[in-house]
Amino acid sequence: FAPRGRYRRSRAAGVRPLAGVTFSLVARDDDGTLGVAVASKFLGVGALVPAARAGAGALATQALANLRYRPDGLTLLGDGRGADDVVTELTRRDPDRDHRQLGVVDSGGAASTYTGAHCLPWAGGRIGPGWAAQGNILTGPEVIDAVADEWVHSTGAFATRLVGALLAGDRAGGDARGRQSAALLVVQAGGGYGGGSDVLVDLRADDHPDPVVELGRLRELHELLFTRPDPADCLPL
Image 1: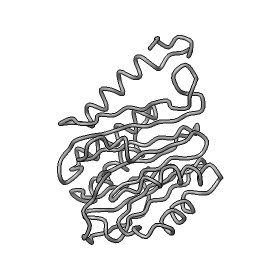
Image 2 (image 1 turned 120 degrees about the vertical axis):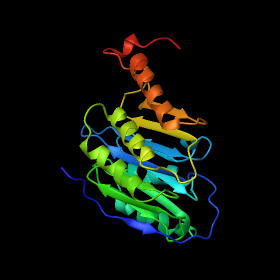
Image 3 (image 1 turned 90 degrees about the vertical axis):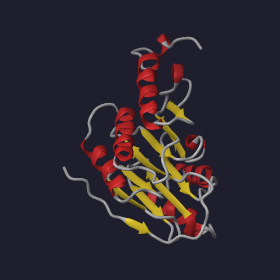
């Protein structure tokens, strides 16, 4: 089916971005697994943009990224607040909200995206059932369209689909300044190494000439080494 969602765009400039100038996809799988895929012309974007908590929700904070959105947003999601409510609450109390960009998906699959009026162009986002895609300083809206289209029409493993959607956006133009880093964060209750955590996938290409492709390689390696029928079969560290 054709992806449906709404655009929220900003073409105003006026502030030098400090972190997370990027494009991202926040999503929920049908089984409740949550994840964020992100790419940027910025060093180590995975250390700044994505956040997710199993059973609560996931988010991406970017543009002039407010890193408080991560713990505060997860707390709100953990308290049962919906995606729209979380975006409203985080931005309401932020005096620099016009320079922020945010995507949120809650545990029930409701999605919300926010682009401040002064994010650098092109900036905007789209949402659909269980997903929010957003980006700033992109070559144009075709980047978010490509991410959304690939996500909606793809099948297979959740983490692989996230990387595939990110690659589609990258190949559609991506960040207008170039490429540097990409990251993938996926959480699932008890899905971590040996069942000892909820972090199913946490992979980063922090400084690479083609980071989304490198992230895909890491994802394939992760699947080979970590995805096993019995958690007791995990390889020793």
